[in-house]
Length: 139
Image (cartoon, one colour):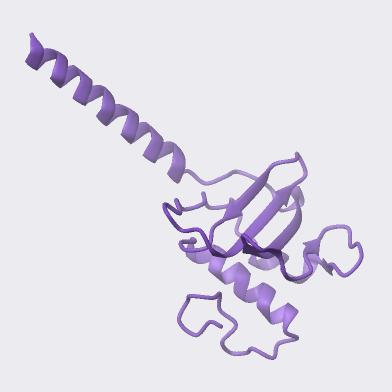
């Protein structure tokens, strides 16, 4: 009886773990027109660079300067585990959601987006090595 309960509990834990891993790995379905802002910022310090916005305000850059580098669909953010410092990339969507890509682990397509942002922010001065921090060739 105890073995059957332990086996059932183990199976439930295994199924829940598989469901969370599946859900967490799925891409986020959006259209490019859903993106209203892309922002880089140090964590936990806060934003350090002007954002890229669909409707420019203040020091913002036009979103069109990086739109070709925005991956569609968006990859799901990677788990950061115990990482607590570095640079976040936040993509704000028209429906009020925001997707944050963390400091330590990011999908390759997001590193490419950060490299494209760095090119614009640094007026191409970083070429040919405008990659994201922590990526070979990056700052």
